Length: 186
Image: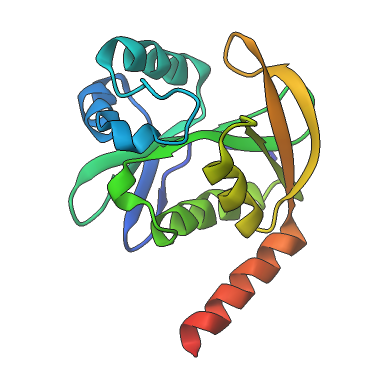
């Protein structure tokens, strides 16, 4: 079974759909506040001249999903499925950002629930490659049940860079989801 890296995924609050060239203006608006990039290595990605090449890379690379707030009917970020060179038989999720107004856990968890649910239909594990200085993303990824496995230099976007590699196994994810569901009921 072939993996669909650009599905349409929906929940009550989010719509994930393939990123399109016409999404530039909306996605840049979501990225245009410097606070969105606080703690991220690309601190100036809110600037148009920095964001444009990033957006072009996401379109060219494929697997990128635009993330929409269903009630507000506008794009609030993006995320991407990709195959990392060190794990050619697995799937990875990354290049994710949400406008900082959507930080706080619930939105990111719902995003990951949609993407991981789709990925785990085809794979038993999902990988995350995180910049060593991006503590916020490392913490959020561990909360999903992922474990840090190793560090490596990889070319994921045209330039080799150091990455902290986290693996999330399907069983660990299912335990996290079950615990969240129990917490929501009580």
